[in-house]
Length: 129
Image (cartoon, rainbow, N blue to C red; front, side, top):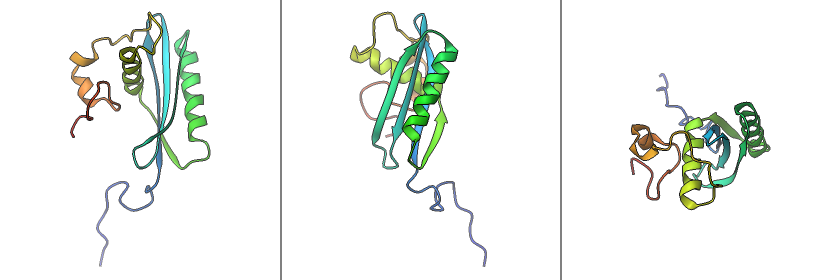
């Protein structure tokens, strides 16, 4: 008797894995970076973000933050620049971002990609729910 193949994550090997998503995006005259640690149950454990003067510094800062957030956990790490765009949009809407830090993709709501955003860019339930 052969065992039926299972989809990724259904074999128990990935059960209980946390997720760390990180990325960077253009923000005004500089670059924004973010990293977010999400537990296997979907709750956000920790997050970090900041601004850098150039793309290379933003990549290094985001990668370092992702490593720090993943340290000591069983976590998958994903590079998703779209997540940084959405996180920056949330900060702008909340008024938490400094003036002049608008994302290069300021038309997130009009973009078809907004529906596929890996984090909520707008208040309300995530797409598909």
